[in-house]
Length: 458
Ligand code: ADP
Image 1 (cartoon, rainbow, N blue to C red):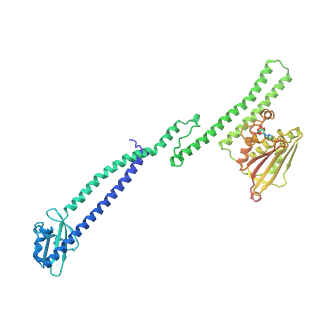
Image 2: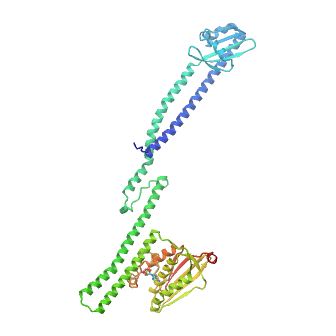
Image 3: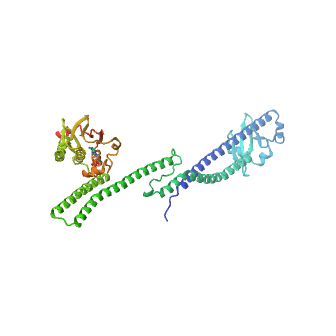
């Protein structure tokens, strides 16, 4: 048989009832002990007073000892002088209380169980020539204690029962928000990520839990939304070259054309294939970046040499547009990072600068150390610049200022997104300083390794 752990409500109730039972038991035992102590103290005080009375009467008017029982209710006592009994009450004799004195010689009050089954409180006092002993029956005291014990013993189960019922009810009320949260959470699916858990009191534990869960839901919703947009944008971008290829092919098939025209058709199809290839490569890069599974190399990278080689590779494009592409790298700067990714980021920025700067424009790439431990590469162009309202979104995937122009230039709107990821993966960041009309400046900031040169010399 499988053992099911009881619910939180049941466990809370049990803990609560258990703790309360323990407290009630300790409290009841305390009350019993206290009352017993007080009752015995009162009895002993009475016994002490009786002893004093007997003693005084014996000393002053011994004949009146017999009046003590009828007039003063002092019924249990004995007076001895040496070994002979001077006086003893009938009750004393009847109940065999003389044996109590043999049982204990203490002058402090003591409880004694008589052979008749009754309990007595017995005490004696000694003078030089005589000894007085008195006793009081404990029956009524014991009855009182027994009654109190019975009341407490009956009250405890009643209180525990009440505690269980009350505790169960209270635990149910306290845990109600959890039930409501669970019901709501069960309803939330990928399609209803906009829903939120109810928050009764944002400052209590459950409220904080619900808030944390809601924050997680918000992040999930954002991620889902971004994924959905990305998939939609990617499909759209993939469809455009495919549609272009299809229509170029269909037109060519429909009309009889000569070999030269076929070559043009194939050429334009290959262009679209190139675009598709670039797009798929970019998508792959971003997907791998999102998965976080890319193993970054940690190599020493000479930023000046890297920028030089990227510029050499792109110079032919700048030359086509008669642009002035220059590199300024007055000091050698080394960073530790993944050369491939850094190269890709720089390539995207410089390529953009060439694409979006008109013919005969100026593009400068400058490498400098902005502060100890931080290097910057500025890619500045004399193009149209990026209007302020677009700057915060320019690094978003598929975001383009002018989609048709970008497409004409072979862009798909992923270059800056990839550049930003590549730089951030290397511990740096990209900033955009752009004034409309006077070109754009993209700045890559990277941490330099102060001990890089020492490292490389070793
Ligand atoms: P694309 O592949 O379209 O170039 P990017 O992500 O590289 O995509 O750039 C996004 C958009 O930012 C581009 O479509 C373009 O409108 C704008 N942009 C990027 N760099 C520059 C620049 N140097 N000057 C002006 N606009 C730019």
